Image (cartoon, rainbow over all chains, first blue to last red):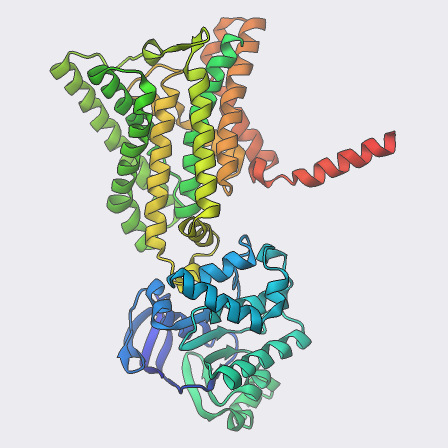
Length: 236
Length: 311
């Protein structure tokens, strides 16, 4: 579905990613793990048009989407749940959902909103409250709900565990898994908490210093020595 | 109504519109617009030109001042602001670019004044717009129309930002541009609309200000510090704060000057500009987030609980 080929990208003169190749198959969860500063967020920013792509290509359903302006990406069927600032804190939950489906016609928005509210009853409970009043976990659920408003082909999630208590993080991960299992959502999940993400993932990539060091099945990566060294603090 | 209050209301309303426009442009495009000075002057000349050449009272041309100001805003956006925003220019660059634009606009306005003099035998370099005013209940109509205009603009802006899909999208973009873009909102359109609204408000504000002061090519330039004082007092992160701040600065300026002139002497009128500057300094020193940043609810709560304890 989403295919990244020989990607070199960064910001201005700063190069962050070097020859990155990633395949995200349909209806599966693909996990990108790596330490802080590995370039995980830059990878998502390159897909979303926020980072500068120096060379390489990004394809969605075999169509080249490299360099597409950020506001057009949503119309291609890609939704994004950022690590920080994932909701509009000064808007109500209802306004947040409407904004998430900005380019869709009103009828479609109403239909999608009904489905999202059914999936996330917590949003319905605080529908007319400002999103800034929600707890961290509630915000994350809202942001995933927002991501679903466009009925996306693929959802990109950037470190959804950030700032969340361990129990809430597990609940968020369960929700992502549920979306794959129940509605067949394709997910590209970027996460620093490797074990949690790899537990629910189908495929995995290990990104270190802007380069892919491993690609394969998520379960295999859990056993990878480099992963242990990076995440368990075992030095070479 | 005392004379100073009547003129003060007109002046404060004009300042509210211009300060509100400065704040609006700053929070949407990160641009401190110094060109607001000449954009306000431009609005005055739009109204003056129509009044002088077509006749009628100034108020019927206020919508035109807004419209022409909006067009000017679009020009600024496409020629100057957009290319710099695309290059991710910092706030200083954005601000300095508007200063350059202001000087260009001022020169064009000077040329336009010469054109009016040579072609129509008009004298547009020192205009008292109040002579074109109409009387309502023994007072200049501007005493009523200026505050009404400001309230109408605030109401329209409020309805636009809270009740329309694009208005909500503007608020979303102001708060979190990357997320709004990822949601499909075109920030380019949002920025352009900001210049339409900001330019319109500057121009309309200038037209209103000319009803209380002398209209000249440097009308806006003479008042730019006052406009910024209003924007800073209101809090640069709140649109309504900017409008309210401008109003407070304008009214305070008139009230204090009147009081000082009465008690000290009319010679203090020459130091009038010190008042908005003093307000700006005090705001920046003691509550840099302006009136909008003060937690009024907490203050009122503690005041009412102290009252309760005392009784």
